Length: 467
Image (cartoon, rainbow, N blue to C red; front, side, top):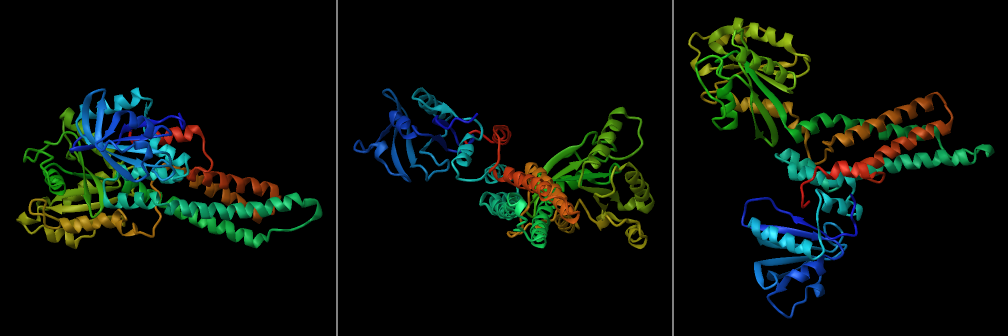
């Protein structure tokens, strides 16, 4: 629901800390705040203050002092929302925050909905829709790479690229429309070769952006990495080492892990979701078999599989596990890293067996580690970083992380491929113009130049309150 005429209020900070911020935005922000805020300098009038000024004073309910606060004033259009806005910095007591919000509502404000401040920033032209979505991504970012992508998109680098593509297509469409307007006079405004070059240029960029989504998605949501293998090969010890925490129970008793254990960690700026699973073996234990079934499910959902083997069990044991794992996978595209573990305790010099016999497919790799001592772990982390494409996330790269953008760009690609086919087959310009308009429409949906209340509702309801 869009309520541009109302003055909204909400807490802008989460729980914890010493200071909290109450945010107010709308045409009556200053007037409403002025009813409950009393400057320490009685000569100061809040409604006379310029933007970017801060006033110290008290929030009062009748004669009761609620808190000593700082009130920051932002004047339209020079505020986050583009409206007159106030930010009240108070102590972080839950009672104090609730009391201030009650006073604001009692004096004419309404409680803000999730994302309503950013929605107003979009509606007032402070940012386009893709930039607004990047605000939510920035708040949710848990790694350096996710933060870098979100801040880049919030600054408008992706938006600028979309604007350029849309301008090129609008130029293309205008030439076609001119030809249609003067069709009876056989006037030609469009050079078909030039039009083809424009479409090919836009199509190349949209395909590059679309293909970046697989990388952007794992950076945003974390790379799912399954740790699997036979019981007692050191899977749980490896998980604890990677997480630097005693997350999983380590025991010499086979079948200790009955269900998967999952946690996240950031390595070289990338978020990984490591999943320790039940050991792969034949067993009559019903609960353990349920855990093994879940192991195979997680394996088929993972981007990377870490297959842990005990060096002392030798190559034959690994071959059996590897063969079973290959049969259970629904796709062989995911990366498999075989970790020959316990090299610190290689009693029978079994390591040479693994080095001498080739056992790997093109998407498989063999590393030697000790989860107990940490040997080989840095090499593993480096390999994971390369698989996650951390070297591809540079300042100049535009990487999309939003499924809505991916779907819109896919539709743009489909429309432009029909345009190229139409040019090749020399179909009438009015039919080509339909596909061009569709591509322009879908690009406009990304930036918000073309949008609906339903789209806005779906986007902003996922924001936190106060943003």
